[in-house]
Length: 86
Ligand SMILES: NC(=O)c1ccc[n+]([C@@H]2O[C@H](COP(=O)([O-])OP(=O)(O)OC[C@H]3O[C@@H](n4cnc5c(N)ncnc54)[C@H](OP(=O)(O)O)[C@@H]3O)[C@@H](O)[C@H]2O)c1
Image (cartoon, rainbow, N blue to C red; front, side, top):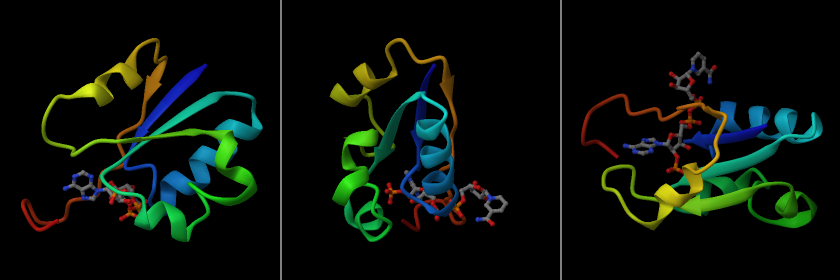
């Protein structure tokens, strides 16, 4: 199964990405930047090859939409408590 996780660089996403990968699924994480993911080892170290990390802006369509092709599941984990605050 191909699982795409917008906001997957966060607390819940890190847990889900590892769980889906361990279960043998293809995981793609959409992030606006790599900083948060780096702190949780999502985009560096031994786990780097376990999933694909794709940069997007969360607002506009772009090249990142190709990451959705063939997706079986999209799990939206974006946490925007105040619109326009991040
Ligand atoms: N953590 C919990 O205990 C808990 C409990 C119940 C429900 N939830 C829900 O689970 C979801 C994820 O929670 P979390 O704790 O994993 O949050 P988190 O650690 O803050 O991660 C959320 C991710 O959302 C992305 N994001 C934030 N604002 C954005 C925006 N304006 N546009 C695009 N992306 C944005 C960020 O990714 P980038 O910066 O990499 O783009 C961030 O890593 C939320 O909906 C939350 O309400 C969490």
